[in-house]
Image 1: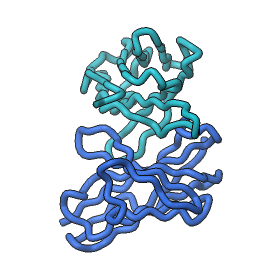
Image 2 (image 1 turned 90 degrees about the horizontal axis):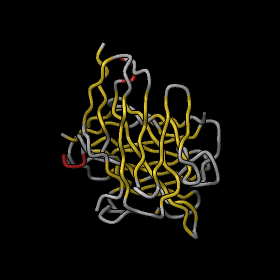
Image 3 (image 1 turned 180 degrees about the vertical axis):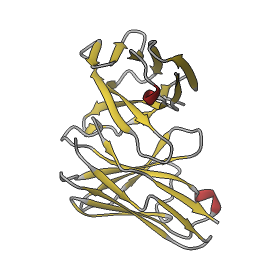
Length: 117
Length: 115
């Protein structure tokens, strides 16, 4: 199946700093990528939809100025958590569909465990 | 309002027996359903899916059943193996005029298969 690579797998940062998470589709082109966040014992919640060459679409309640998404190429999307605070500590996961039918059999990156201290 | 519900947060099953994980949904627009398996600190791994035009899909030890009238689907694993121990997420998507919606996930069910 398709491979989505996410980096880094874990990061610890100081409060107030910014962290960039990369998501790459290794063997297919992804015009769309999705960013999810998972808090402990909770479900994966969609944060935003990243569209290649255009602005990301954010879900209600997600601050677009805090979670900057860039989808500069068909194989790379980045999520930057700006001015991170301890409440941003979570597990962030990207995914990309491997077909024109968005949402079906989406493949996921390995996830990034962010801890803000 | 949670559109995809997995009401059992955990399930324990003896090795060799059948594991049945349940999922309910409320949005009648959903037309594609998927099950993912997830280990801690890893991304979900796709297991099996089913389209709303079917009521059953089987892949090896995994079978997914869909009851559209009840808005209910289930994942059967038989025989269960210790390596199946993980959190299982049910997910759904819908076709809209602008394309499919992103996946909506349930909260997951932690399966423990006891040797």
